[in-house]
Length: 86
Image 1 (cartoon, rainbow, N blue to C red):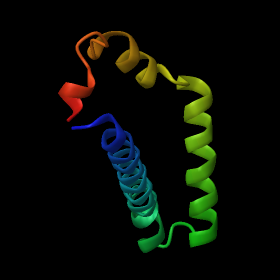
Image 2 (cartoon, one colour):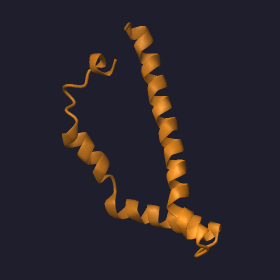
Image 3 (tube, one colour):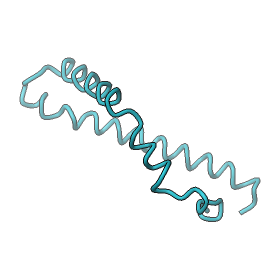
Image 4 (cartoon, rainbow, N blue to C red):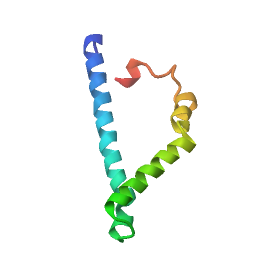
């Protein structure tokens, strides 16, 4: 694939991946509070606040450990080239 075509294709693929992750997170957020709302333990507004609070707290405690692990050891950067991607 030519370099002039490869970059826009790569940008498009990254955009599609980010959109997919957004939609996946949107559905995961609903799944995380569905039980507590359907059993009427909490009102939907409080359940959303509850979930947002604990997602933030989890980030404060665990940070970027998963991203750092993937960045340091799981994927060998020297192997990933444009030929591997395309």
